[in-house]
Image (cartoon, rainbow, N blue to C red):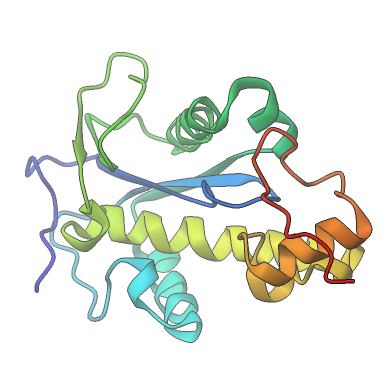
Length: 198
């Protein structure tokens, strides 16, 4: 399915998406992207549908051709302080504030958003598979968060973050059981750590 360029047809419409809401460790990362109105990019789609290699190839093109883009994030500590939903809004607002130009409309992937300044917005369920600007934001949020987790993996290799990126895999939960949580784990999350087998 061909993705639509914008929802409103207006210049300076920002697409916004996040990555890492369901993780046990690391930040939640959001990206905001404003693309040229006539922009097209073959293969651009929801980041979850793409291979890692394809995501990085598309990121290079997005960064080269986007009118404006910015990435924001909320740490695990911030998530614990204000909960994951509010921390996600904080990251989205940070990304929007850093764009370099104030958007005249914001298009959010999902069904909830905390209004930012006085800018009108619309929420789009599965918007990352419907609109180019949200798809571009999904790729930036995903790839930048993956890089953060790969860097943190060098400090704490026992949790396997290079592979699981902080998501609740069985091996990740077993590593928390065996080694205890790291400073980057979200202490407010329910880890459901499996019992020891011996």
